[in-house]
Length: 191
Image 1: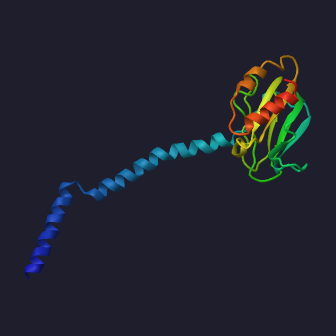
Image 2: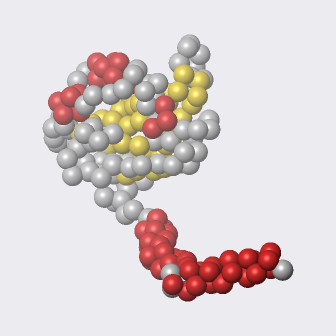
Image 3: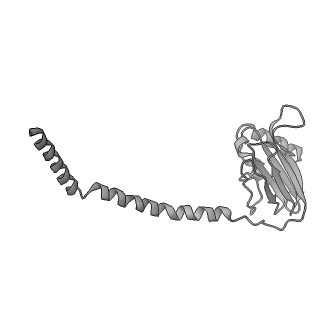
């Protein structure tokens, strides 16, 4: 009997404590929808932005140049993580298409290594990406996961003002082997 009275008292005290706090359960369920309301608009906006394709900066002229992305140089040697070709010359309006011949590669322009006013590009891993070259100048590019391993390349777009961004492009600092590869590319291009 004493035990039942003790248990009843504990239950009664618990109910008073819970009602004095305003009922925690009601607070918890009220907080959950507020968090969901805050997150919902952000989730709805992201897909709309991702779905909008980027318009080319200039009209394509019909010339397409493919650059293959390899884990091992197919021409022999000890080359690992390479673009083929890694140095090319092109014209305004040419389309360069980067093809992930081997998995785990992508192509992105390098900030500071594209002519002023050009937007550049950012490809996805294991996906082809095409870019219509909008203006003369030097365009440096990389495979983001293998940048430090020296997986970089350069496009020289011929035309008036093609040397305008050469010094700025040379001044860009690169991690690991990428700096040495760019030195070789600038030398090979005669810049």
